[in-house]
Structures are given as C-alpha cells and as structure tokens.
Length: 197
Image (tube, rainbow, N blue to C red):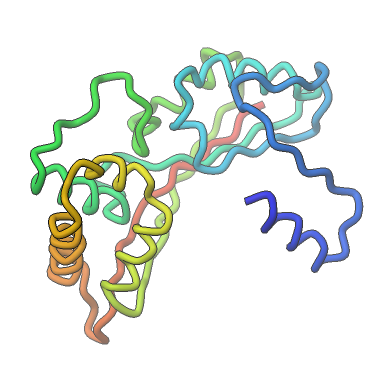
C-alpha cells in the first residue's frame, strides 16, 4: 500500500508527503499535530479501536476532523459476505467468537459509539453504496484470492482439491445471485462513512 501511495505521489509531482509504517494502536505523534486524519477500512480490524481512536483524537488540532470508512452489516456487503458464508457452509467453519475484529464489526452504530467513547463530537454518518462490478465471476474470485487472506486462513487445513471446489462453488453462487445480463457480476456493498471533530 505504501509503495502504491509513493508511486501515486510521484506521478502527481507531490514532494511534501511523508510515508510511514506504524502500528495504528500505538501511534507516536505529538498532541494537536494534525488538521485531519483519515482511516479507510481499517478501524474494524483493530482489537482495541477505542484506544486507537483516543490516540487519534489526541493528535488532532482543536476543531480538526477525523474521517473513517468501515463496512456495514454482512447482509449489506455481499462483496465479502458471500465468500465468507459459502466457506462457512462448505467446511462447517463456525462464526468468530463475539468481540473478534471482523469486516462488519463496526456496523449497526458501533463505529459512532466507539468514536463517542473516544471523545469525538459532532459525529456525522453517511452510507454509500459501492458497485463492485466484474466482467466475470472468475474475475471476482481471483480478486478475493488476491486480497482476502482470512479466507485462505479459514480453509488452510483443507486439501487443495477442496479449496478449488470452494472457489468453483463461490463462482457459481456469485453468478446465480449477482450475475448481470452481460455475463458479468455486480455486488453492491454499503460503506459507512463517519466524520467527527
């Protein structure tokens, strides 16, 4: 991600940008240091989001803003949920224990609640539907193979032929439930965008 960001900054001719890798739960910047902080699709994976949010709040200048995007409930994010539910059904994988960080762990008002706990005020939310369109179901499953490490981890103990059967089954389900008239697939999924001061 940092390599891509550096590449984009260079393409845009930006020279006033610094790139750093850091643990989001132990950020070490001075108080009142930033005019804005953004976290895109990361907050829901933190074991202790309130601690991270308190740290972010501390680093913001007075009246500065924090903005985040997280995913909505599983029923509203088929881009992820169809892959997870298919895997759970095929291999009898139980859902994660309560409190485990998950893709949809900040849905149902949780993100706003955690921001309030961390001291943010004037919290505003907007839901945005993203159309994840692919030329084919195979293109969708290839992307999931590339980006969804938890899926691979959940079926790591399965033999290769069973893993291949999973990907084939997932393709078939995606076509059946989200296929388009032109042979592609479209999985509209809802992102929750929240800003607080």
